Length: 261
Image (cartoon, rainbow, N blue to C red; front, side, top):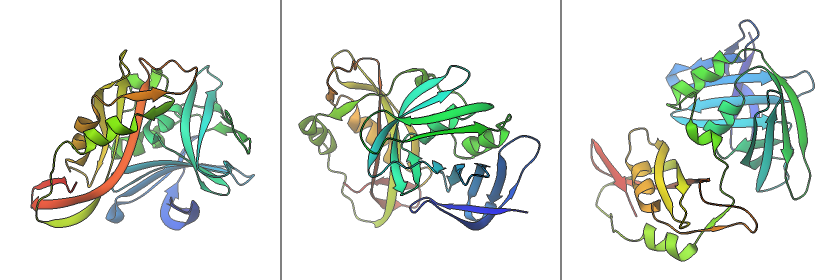
């Protein structure tokens, strides 16, 4: 039986999670003790696509996608007509990771070809792969991480631009939540809709770690109302703004976790 694991920070594939492939589906493996599940589609030419859930954190990594450095906008296209422009990030010299992993994983559901192509900048990157006909394994990983199999926001374009720095700083500092307690690392991912006034509304939490923490809700609450600055020539109202962040949480009681700052 083949073995596989993702070390997402370095994008290295090494043995750890037992993988099995049934019918024409993605390989699937899990390690219940570590809270890890993964769906993998790999190719004889050395590329691989890995959708992984680790302790509540979802990731999508494409081995063989050479993005250079930093953040890149990719066009992900499917032969059934689906097309989406998504933010990705170089994870290693020969691997890229999705900054919106739920949206990216749902785009990979269903058989047929998928093509990744950079929209601007250098180096230019293009990669085409044939996906398995079935995607039940991807669905299992999405479900394990509490992500929906369908999301209405996937039909909306991703916002291109940045938040107004002063507006964002005011939002993040409007309340002091410092309290005594033990600090633990936290992470969250949210999306908001850009309003006609270029302020963020309807912010939703997609991930909040540790699982069950209030960090994601706090990020969504603080981000609501923040002013954004669209990229030149890009329409902004009605687009989806994405934000992920990390911080330290202070555990006030056994059952309550609040942001440290």
